[in-house]
Image (cartoon, rainbow, N blue to C red; front, top):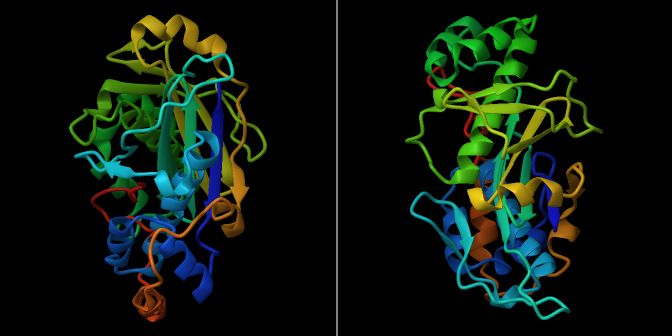
Length: 308
């Protein structure tokens, strides 16, 4: 079984003209046009990093040439590989299929992929509420968590620690929702997380957190948690493709691994241009970068920052 955990630090990426032009040439035209519609350079960079992470994964791990990769979006906006090529192993059998998922929020874009199971990933940056106090923010978000989860969040200590616990729970819930592909219609109070007793660190991945679905503990799902840095928490949900395969899923999982931080050179190492150079891509990006940057990491009083 294969497992991939990659991260790219978008926040400190200051693409040169040649880098941005290369990136735009190495993604599909409709992806390039969609990225060009973002108002802020921060969002354009995050979306671009996500496209390149995904194409690198498909090329290097699934063995599909960069120029033959065709990505589509589901009605809910989740990217998927259209008509993937059938790849056979040396034994002549078809290997287990890959599942992959992307998220970007704060300063990072991340990709998680797993062979032979479902996967969802979510990253959250621990930030103070933008337009409300922490108690008011929690009051607005009351219905997103169970009474037990709120007791854990509000007993964490200082407001900073309470927010960290809040975002940790939020990332766990989002990772599960993204893995099953349900979307916004899922009642988040149906899932309740019982956190691992160990503290989160940047060097160690926890797998002890348990999920209760409709008040019953789910044995089939595994949740990986770690910190990319002191402010960014990432959660990965791993589950079997169906109930019949749940007995085989856990023993076949490889050991948990930390996210590998990639550079722009890493993202484009296997890339090949798909379109001709369009100077307007750089002109548009420069305008975004030079425009006054509204802080996009802070959430409003209505909802937490959205990870994608």
